[in-house]
Length: 136
Length: 167
Image (cartoon, rainbow over all chains, first blue to last red):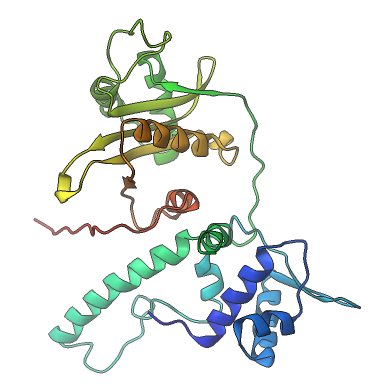
C-alpha cells in the first residue's frame, strides 16, 4: 500500500510534533529531517491547523506545535484529511465494475480496504510514537 | 475522535482471580458495555476457568482450575471495576503454545484510569510465568476502541487471518 505524498508529509509532521508536545518546530526543521519540500509541508501544516491538530506559534523561535490529543487522534484521522483509503466503500466506481468479474474484484478489494481502515483507525499517535521509539 | 477528552475516576484496586460472588458484577459490566445480559455465558466461563476449592498454598486466593486458565478481576473490596479472561492454548491452528485473551472489560466510569492496562499486564505476567512468550487476541474489525487499547500495548496483526462463509 502506498500513501500520497501529502499524507506522508502530514504523518511525519504530526508524529514529529506530537512526540514533544511542549516543543515548537519550524516547517524547515521538519522538512529537512524527512527530505521533503518546505513549501509542500507548509500547505500540509495549514490543513492540520484548520482541524486543530497543530497550531502556529508566531514570533522569534516560532514554528508549529501539536495541539491535539495524541491518545485520541488516530492515523486514520490524519490520513483522511488528505486521501480516501477505501474508495470502493465510498462508492468510487471504475469501468467493468458492473460485470460479475468486476463485482468479484470489488469484493476482494473491499476486504483489503476494510483491513486497511481497521488498522489505521486503531493506531493512535501515542501508539505510533511508542512504535517509533521501539524502532530506534 | 480527534480532540475528545474524558475525566477518569481514580480508585485503588487489586487484581485477583475471580470468585463466584464476582460474577453478577461481571455480568453487569459486560451488559453495560455490550447492551446484552448474558448470565449463563459468564457463569459457564467461571465454572470453566476458576471454580475450585481454595488452595492452602495460594495465600488465601483462589487458583485457576489449571495453571494456564485465568479469569481475573480488578476489585476494590467487593466492587469489581473490570475483568479479563485468558488462557494458554497449544497447537491450535498449528501454533506453538501462546496466551489468548478472550475478554476484557472495565466499568465505563473507571475507563482511562489504567484498570484495563493493569488487568492486561497482570494476565501477561501470568502467561510469562507458565512459559509462553506470545499473547494473541481476536477482535471485531470495527471495534476500534478495544483494538486501540490492544495496539497501545504494542500488539500488531499476527500471522493468522480469520476466514468465514455463510452456511
